[in-house]
Length: 131
Image (cartoon, rainbow, N blue to C red):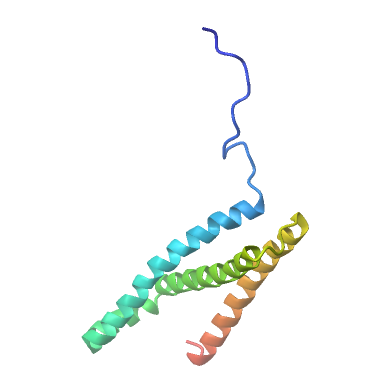
C-alpha cells in the first residue's frame, strides 16, 4: 500500500507554542523547582539543628556562588509561581479569558516576577550588610 504524501502533524520542532502555553509549562516547572528547593531549606534546618559545625558547612555552600545561584533560581521560581497562580485564580472565576486580557496578564506576570525578585534581593542584601 503506497504511503500518501501528506503533511505530518505539527510537533515542537515545527509548531511555535503561544506564550500562554509556555507559561503554563513554566508554571509546572517552577512547581517542581519549588519542591526541589524545599530540600535546600530542609538542609539548612537540619544543619542548624545538628550544631555549629554542620551549620558552618551549610553557610559555606549558601554563601558560595553556586549556593547564591540556587537561592536566586528558587526565588525567581517562587515569585513566578505565585504571580502565575494569582492569574489562574482570576481564570478560575471566569475573568480575563479574551486574547487581549490573556496577553496583558502574561506580561503582568513576567514583569511582576522580575520586580518582586529584584525587590527581594535588594532588601535581602541590605539586611546582610552588603555581603
